[in-house]
Length: 207
Length: 427
Image (cartoon, rainbow over all chains, first blue to last red):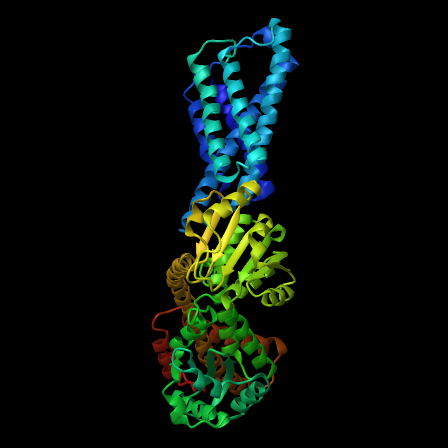
């Protein structure tokens, strides 16, 4: 769990730097750094003992699967940060009380667009992670899908974000609703990440 | 050498007084030259804008300087002095420096933080340089005023927030939409404030413009002015489908856009955000519209409220600015003080050198012909003695001391120095 949490935070950091330099957005670090900090901090409480990898799992599919899954989660983490920024800025504009951060925060439109792009990215990566997982599970264990808790929660996450994207494209659930959904989505990601890793025993509990 | 300013501004003089003493471009040069040649004024700069007319000057004697500048103002503009006198203010020394710094950084302006005054001051300075009406003191002072204003602009938020309806509207639009160039805008009705805001949106990038009005001819007219498209008033709600920013200012006594109507439009727009500014009184847009998702409605009071907050913020920033002004005044006065120590030091050096030369000549004459080497050694001896004696007092005069003026005075008395310029212009 230690190495998983710290790898997670490194992935978020990579995405953060990409966005920081690409968009030069004000305040982004103030909203993303706490996420990275909490992840790093929590990793400090887990055992640092690193178990050797089960030879069954050792293949290229494994590497791709893990990197996709982590980068996908990192994209959702960023979307969570951006979504929070959106909600704050939208509250300022809606209530007509332009608070202290109004001038520093980016515009609603750019926050909404970046949030959307991050969810598309995270969703694609998650889809790839699930697909590579299925292929690799077949080659390692001989079965595609075994309803282990991690698999179930990944599927739930996938469905939630699929719904977010679907609603956006069809009925225009953008802005505030999209931001709130990206926050809820990330809550589920976090639960799937820590909750399952800690509470359950399954084949994903190599962590 | 005394720095002083005589002038009037929007706080002390009504427009009918200000317009009588304003210097227009052509006569400005003439006026600066007249002052330069008047004798009483050593250096001068005239700043003339619609809100203020001020003459900055360096004079030998404050009393006669003030009098001659006042007389000049009255005679140049053919206005009796009694008519002006009650509006005129006079600041001297550090107060004059403070006044200039506050003017330059627009702390003295009608709208604190407005950017024009600095440019106007630079223009005045340039005109003065062209006419050679300034010297060491005013040149340095003006440069310091400009740099102080720039420092205040970068170190405080004095000019950051919008303090007019149209600026506030654009500021909000940019926080909702980011890039305005891909957005469309509709002007419903007409009116000075609405048109100003519209023009402002257009200069900030909005390209697609719709105009609607109950009077079709008026709509056509405004559409032509804004390079937009006139929309029949009956159809304007349909056109909202393609409109991102709405400014509404009609004389209608009722709501012309209701919540349900816009709700339908929003659904069709797939919830693309809409920013509505309703500056009509009574209001023309149903206030409940703000409850809709992705719709942001501001009425005149909301905008006024934002401006109020921004003005308060500027006032807070102005306090910080005043502190910067204080610092910069100190640094200018220090420079000026060192300047007044310079003549004393020069006089002291000259005096010592005079004595040395005279005594050396006497001795050499007494000694008669000698080898070049010996003469050189004797000369070297005198130079080094003089330098060693003079060094500590010179260093003390150059040093930054509190009772420097007193020290200058004592040195002058001790060595019986005659200094041409006066040293009594402090504070």
